[in-house]
Length: 211
Image (cartoon, rainbow, N blue to C red; front, side, top):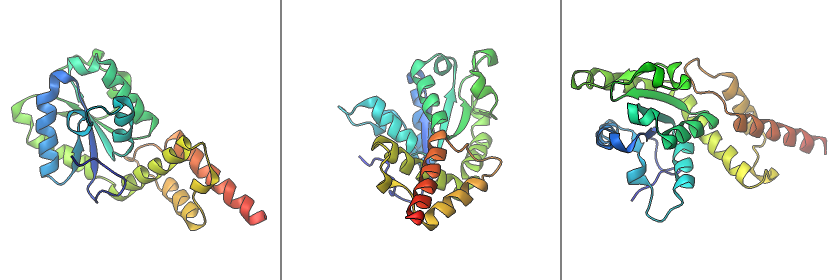
């Protein structure tokens, strides 16, 4: 089984968050995304038996360039789906809500209501709306990929206890600061951890220059 890694390939990586009751839809969507040139992941395929599942889910979301959340009555009521969206928000991921079953709007969390939906709850919509999904995923590709790369570096630094050896240095800091300043309007937010990582990298570089 091939699992996503930081350097696996140049395809955009998409994590699909879904309720178990929507598994068939998630499977079909994953296949269509893969056929369209994306790396698409769902937990049933990409968590090995015996793995710590919560840790692995975090890793799948962390290494994703975008998270597609399947909206249905069961997913908006699911604690696990809510946890996955929380992780995606903490990591500053681009979140694309996709309606796979008609769902009363008042049941959908406010944090998803503020985003633009993609509607694929009927067979008639699944062709045209899939094209919209592809377009949304491919928007600002370079910036989003850099968001993922810096997110992975920041996560590694955080898990290791903030060692200076894992900070950015020299021109890499300037490049990262330029990346942050050039955030497109449709780009995902720079996460708190990413901001802390860039700040620590700049402080470390300033201290080295003083010495």
